[in-house]
Amino acid sequence: MSTSSPDPDKPNCPYLPDLEVDISTHTAPLPFGGGMYPLGSYPWRKEKWLYSVTQTTHVITHPPLETPPSVQENTVRLVVTKSLAIGNARGAQVLLCSIIPYGEGEKTFEAVAKIYDPLYYPPFSEIGSYPLDVVGDADEDYSKEAAAYKCLERAGQTGLFAPAFFGSWTFSFPTSYKQEIHQRKIRLILIEYIPGICMRDLFVQNGLNQINATHLSEEYRLEVLAILLDGVAKQCHAGVDQRDLSPRNVIITPPPKPKETRPQRVVLIDYNISTVYELTEYGKRPSQLAKLPPNPMELFWTASLSDLAGWVPPGLCYDRRLQQEWLRSEFGGEKKVLYEPLEKELKLHETPPEELAVMQYLGS
Image 1 (cartoon, rainbow, N blue to C red):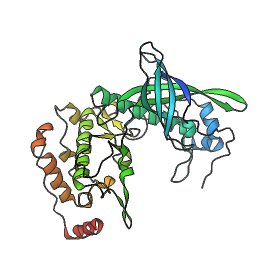
Image 2 (cartoon, rainbow, N blue to C red):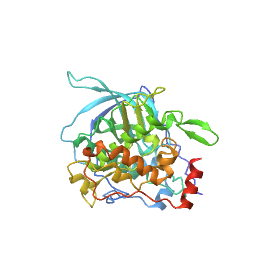
Image 3 (tube, one colour):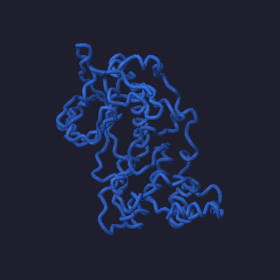
Image 4 (cartoon, rainbow, N blue to C red):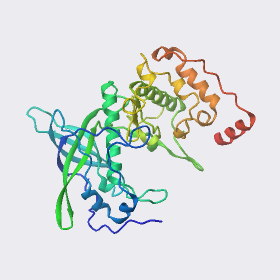
């Protein structure tokens, strides 16, 4: 098992309340690496070299990718008011901030900053413990997330199911290395702060080995699920696949009250592994060219909902036919006019006896 080299130059994560920096608009690189994206122009470092250097040496000697200047250059003051998710090896740092414009008459506003600082990305993989190119990982996350938000913004889909997007930015940050101060360039995006609660944080211990949200009414949970699947279909129509539909990436606002049956807003966050199809080698998907979004029935007829287990009733997670019957009742009646007509008749799954026994066990 590999271990990281001693790294005496690496400072602790600085993204704490009261930190202030000037940030300037920045054009993110085109998305690259993983999935259907091309490898791009990033010069990935060899494993042998990564073993030989500290993370600080790697980051100081290899700045992030450069891109042409922004068409509309702007600089604002960012003041951290709360650390939402930070750490020395967390990956992207997430902060609640006040954004103070320098322009006359412009108002201060609140935003979440997602900072892609490679010095605080994990230097080794969780599985296999091989060294990671943290600069490439940070640039890849930044490029994919910025591309997804830009695409959704063009489609008019930010500010509701996805957070409002306030652009991609950069700043310089002083870092001591070998008794010299280096100004590191660091990328970030600004998005809307959602004053709600993460779906995962609504899970509680409801029984032996049962961590779930069943203390909330099934009606409420299914209403949230329907909003989620509708939002995914609309993002598909815009050409974006978030690719990580899980409780940790769903914000519900406001937090539910007892006996509540419908949330005001459900928001899907975290687009760092997303795909914007028109930027891949395959181009736009047929669903993008259609007049209306695809029907969620079509998208989820055979797809498992197990990633949402604990929120979705067990039957819908493990019984395909029951899931299909719910999809048909939710999206096959009056709502079907909101979507493209089904390309073909969707047949209900016939559950064999041995599969039924497994489902009964999982649902018990």
